[in-house]
Length: 364
Ligand code: ASP
Image 1 (cartoon, rainbow, N blue to C red):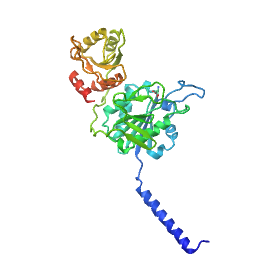
Image 2: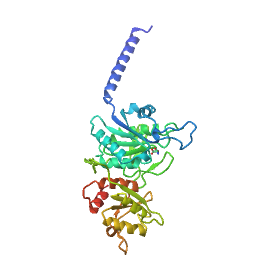
Image 3: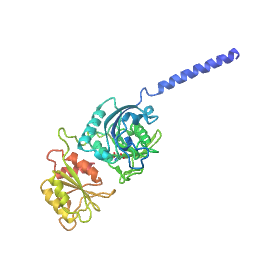
Image 4: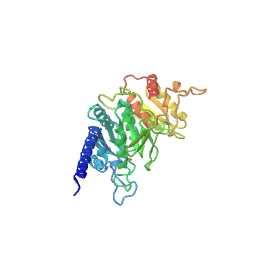
């Protein structure tokens, strides 16, 4: 039995502890950040047969609730509202699924009960969806796309860690006004510059021209530069009715002729992205076909088939092969796939001209 003075001391300490804990509780933010988690499928939701090796798996199988439950600590970081928007491999993303995704994201961002959006997505076309969303949203609330290179059932699956990182980045105060980002392998990339650079390994994404935006480790997020000023309005609107115009990508290699260009125009393409050799070059046969079709109102955007470096406006040297003479547009440092996304949106503008398109590309 303690003497009375010792018991009083204990009571005092206990009371102090209660007061301390209570004030600590009040010091915590009242609520966690609210994240809308949109699941679209991909390898992150993929299942590998028990004895399967490497590539024998199916993308887009695991449901969103299972994905969330597999990540311990996810619900500590944010209040998660999860929705299964679709469950497909992103190699099957198309105009229809893009519209569904973009419309849901736009509605989610307008919801005052949503602080940020995280989208689980296959890695094949993640950079295209990210760019589409970045061009059609204002960029104020963070939108983070995340995927994985190994299926959910693989040994050392990278999906759970990537998903936790994505939510961590999305709710981080420094992420506001950074718009649409891609998070994989502890790295944060911007939607405009990120591209997939590896077929299978977990470090599959890079931003070869601009560099990554930052990194995430545990609960810590570091951005290398300041956040851009809020843009206010999205750059482009989605089609009010109908869908996007047809835009194809045509790859230049030694001996490429006019056949694919003619087929694309014949199929109704309103725009064609040339994935050119070197700094956006075309074969003479391709250029002749391009010259013919630009006169008929088809827009051609020159890009490079390589992963880095710009395609600048060409003065054509001594001949009449300049962009102005042929009617082509220089695609700056957009990859062919991103240039296609740009054209699909830009060609929705009524009676858009080559000069207007040039200005729009310059602003990206
Ligand atoms: N084919 C898969 C997809 O894009 C690959 C992945 O998610 O990594 O859906």
